[in-house]
Length: 620
Image (cartoon, rainbow, N blue to C red):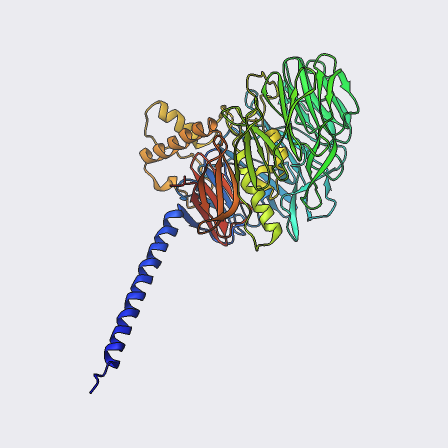
């Protein structure tokens, strides 16, 4: 008689099921641990996150339909919350070089501008004399001046021809007293803050931000306007088309030396006297001039390139392409290079004798003394859009999915790294996320030597300026960002006007006295400092000041690509100095507004009503 095995088989099957279930449970908990380990923090807000942006102090500002939040970027702690409904991203603007954020608050037909303390949310000063959203700013800390450019009712659908008349207001930075205001004579084209369906805010990010220089304020919207910084009195005014119609940033950021300010527009470059405001010379018929590099004796001008189209955010090419050298004393063309007939990237100077550019096919070295081509090699980068110099002096050429380095002297390829975007996704989303990823590098000005080596460059002007392009644009033009990346992301100059000014004083006196403002705003809720004792207040605020000093000295080292990783999609970080992909951030479905904070080593993104922070880990 055969034994009945059904019971034993059933028991064995049950044991097997238990083992499998147990293994799955262990695996699930393990995976949960991995996910939790990858996510540094998650903050739940009171509604869907409509916008978020980082600041110099490491404070993350985020808006919902009901509130404005300020969070500690490193921990995710809510520093404060204000019940403000229906804020647009253009209604919130951090003031560079300070601990203030400007809030443009509408109440019916009235607009109120508030300068709020980033650490507490309290109102430092307010003005009821403005209308519209904050577009751009310039700060002159030596004279305690803040120039803010506004535009009223700047909302429309993407593709609409949105034109508005900018209005500039100049305030005393410490108390908000308005010194003067001025409305421009004509309306100018604006650019969408985001390219998406429906009505969106429009901005002036398609123009160069205003700047203070020699106690004057320069504006660049419908020509060049020079105004007395204290009174607003006009010294000179020249009206001309700044940008090519329908395109953004087709003219160069201004440069300056001891004698003149150099500006471009209408296919011309001009030198304007810093003492009289009169034109010293004019170079004509150059074409679109999106980049100028000023040295002691020569002004190098790039003509043509890639530009963002205002109607849909697409990046298009527009010539003629070339590089010219102008004598700074006379404006006379010393030479012109016209060999780039297939598009053109930004230009770099590895030494005082060499100019490096790239077109669609080749990396070209030009002799800076005579404009003759010294060498040409095929870079084999699909749609090359920028050239930078890494810390070793190598020319690094980047495109949409690849980056490669070349030895400037020999022209030999040094390394190459390629990361293709994920497939089977909406093309537009992939493009937006990929462009946003690469743009993270340029937020921090690149590496310390990424622009020019052994060359005295005079481009930088002392004025602190702010434009929301890096925070707003979902499809940034990388050529434009590469052109501007030599500017410091954070200035060494810092003027605290809120609670941090008291914290700095207390720290210098080694005091642990309370640092709260004497009259806190009544509409501020969930304020973290109210829950801390004086010693811990001072500790946290001192940590913020230390972090800002670190950020002022920081330069980015990684170029990011949106690609397929080992266990899903995410960002691969390539070190621009050696080509090693030593960072990976797994993001299954990021929104195209994500932004990084290299000082904190975190990347921020949003999903529904949550803000998420992922560590920018180096690969093990």
